[in-house]
Amino acid sequence: FRGPGVGLVAENSGRVFVTDSIFDGLTGDGQQGTAARVGFESTLFVRDSQFIFNGPGAPGGTGAPVTVERSTLLVRDCLFQANTSDDEGGAIFADQRSSVRVTGSTFLSTPPSTTGGAIAVRDSNIRILNSHFESNSASEVGALLIESGPAPSFIDRTVAIEGNTFINNSGDSLAQVSVRASGAVFNNNLVVSTHEESSSEQTQFENNGSSDQSVAILTHNTFVGAGLFDP
Image: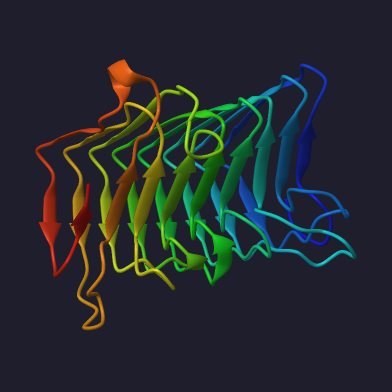
């Protein structure tokens, strides 16, 4: 799939399986999602593929290269590199009770987006497993922003971030990861910052959801650098 234009659209309960493919230089069609758009209770499963140099170009074409609304996105063993966004999520944005699962994938060198340098998720379920985030940037939260609903009463959603590596992702807040969700799980991750200016928290958790799931679960993580954790 090569630009200009949008790579693929899955809508109206559609199901699309993509493997061994390249999404390169796609600029969108004036709607959300410059490389792939998934909506209206559809499913996109993409594996062993690359998303490179995709970003807004068509008039009104905004947002992350891959956008998901009220649908399911499954990503396995993919590369996202040097994509751009003029809104949330430099590579992936999900909203409206979607379900996202990312496994064994790499997110590199995303230029500054608004929030969530690599992935931004709102009001959706997400699992990110065994993936690598490096040198992504945003005006707020360098690598990963997850917000399960409007503060202060966040909606209960499944949030699991396990076995990942976050290295030198940057935002104006200097946070690499920000999770605003009830009962989030953050296990076996490595968070590294070598930036001298990294004096504020690199991982931020805000959990104001239901009383029985109001605390994030963090175990067996490694933090390398100064001022890396804010519970």
